[in-house]
Image 1 (spheres, protein in one colour):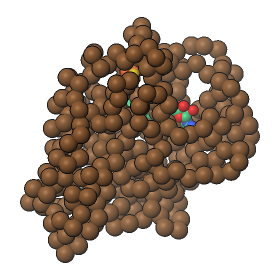
Image 2 (image 1 turned 135 degrees about the vertical axis):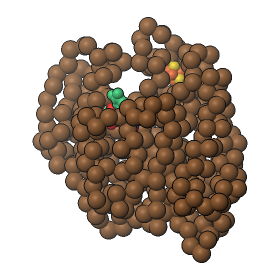
Image 3 (image 1 turned 45 degrees about the vertical axis):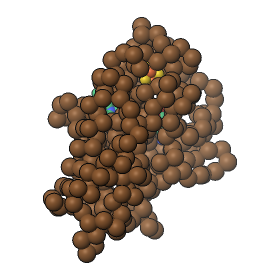
Image 4 (image 1 turned 45 degrees about the horizontal axis):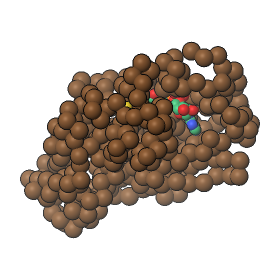
Length: 328
Ligand SMILES: Cc1cc2nc3c(=O)[nH]c(=O)nc-3n(C[C@H](O)[C@H](O)[C@H](O)COP(=O)(O)OP(=O)(O)OC[C@H]3O[C@@H](n4cnc5c(N)ncnc54)[C@H](O)[C@@H]3O)c2cc1C
Ligand code: SF4
């Protein structure tokens, strides 16, 4: 591990001044950053510990709930407001990592975690455009079983690893960011970026900005929401495929649907085509399957991960069927 300076800050303005210095990273739970520093993918020369900032509150606010960026994954998952108001958020967090990690890790850090593509994390596999721009992508012709089928480019096919980010994208979450000139808000669906020709640029957060909170608006489809994750092991494993779904059903008709997919996209994948295919339809397996087909029509496999195209459709159909109460 490369040497680095370490400092703790107790207020946001101090954090922003310290964080703006070059080669500086904020550290919260450290469960992703320190890992990447140990394998030398990340080499900050300064770490600013933000854990003392007052950003861990989970509260009801006008129009929804606000979750502080330093709230721990386990606290958010267990919070009664979150469980009642946005069950998909709680379920996505409980399906993530392990209890020990969830106790340590923050939701701000969760949104910012980096891909689990093995070529990205293994320095001896030199070509990786995300780690070393312009060097090539080892996964496209290599072992790509875990990789993305939506939003890929010829430069990178890595999936975004977060479960929480998928649920937040589905439920129209808004991320609050604080920088030197004040606070701004970004829709969660726009926060993470497609790889295009610059896969090293993963999100819209500027170097001198801090995530302060995540807002989840209240809506019928938010209250009736769930998260389904399919993975190689039943726990402690990243998604092969996942679906965060929210449905507002009235008089046997879907009034509104919210869907995002995980484990298959280069970013948390908001499924607008599937949502449109569901709206004003009766909840039935045929309708759910048509919605899944519509969303996956642009999916592309790279060999080992071809199976994900059908798996993602089945994940979505099952998630919708369960949420609709076994509609058939
Ligand atoms: C074995 C293992 C299994 C895992 N399984 C899963 C899984 O199944 N699903 C899943 O979703 N995740 C999984 N994770 C990832 C885990 O959830 C993340 O490591 C964790 O959420 C990161 O949070 P943290 O607070 O530890 O972030 P840190 O490691 O402290 O920081 C991560 C990044 O976020 C930045 N950062 C942190 N807070 C802020 C902030 N407020 N503002 C701006 N930048 C910030 C840091 O600078 C750093 O770049 C797993 C991790 C491990 C090690
Ligand atoms: S998929 Fe992306 S992260 Fe993985 S090797 Fe290719 S460029 Fe690197």
